[in-house]
Amino acid sequence: MISRRPSWDVYFMSVASLVKDRSTCLRRQVGAALVKEKQILATGYNGAPSGISHCDEQGCLRTRLEVPSGKQHEICRGLHAEQNVLLQAARHGVSVKGSTLYVTNFPCSICAKMIVNAGILEVVYADEYPDPRALEFLQEAGITLRRVSLKEPAGTRDSGGEEARRT
Image (cartoon, rainbow, N blue to C red; front, side, top):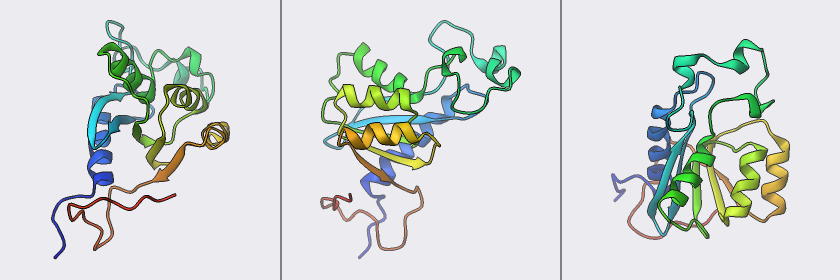
C-alpha cells in the first residue's frame, strides 16, 4: 500500500517553497530550510535585513541598472535565502554542522562558500541557477548535491522507513 505521506525530501522542499513566499525580492523568490536528523533547524528567504526597507518598497537597484542575474551581488540590498538561514541558526545558537540544506534554487558561488564553511554535508535543490563556480566549490568540498522535484512520481511516497541515499 502506498502511503499518502510525502517523502522526507518532498516534505522539506515543500517547507522551503512555502518559506520563499515571504521573500520581498522582485527578481527571484528563494526559500531555504536547514535540516538535521529529520528536524528543521532554521528557515530563510531572500530579502533585505531586518529594519531595512525591502525591495518591494524601494524598488530593485539591480533592475534599474540592468545588472544581469548572478552579477554584482554586492549592490543588492537583500540577503540570499542561504545566507539568511545560516544567520537565523547562528542567531539562535543552533549548530548547522552535518546538516542538509533544502533550497528552492541552486546556490550562487558566494552562498556555496558559506555552505562549505558552515559544515553542511548536503544540498538538495529544486531549480537550477546558472553559476558554474558554485558547482565547482561544492563538488570540490565533497558536498552531496541532489535535485528534487516537488512533484513525486507514482510509488515514491514515504512508507515510514528510511529513504535510500542518492548520489
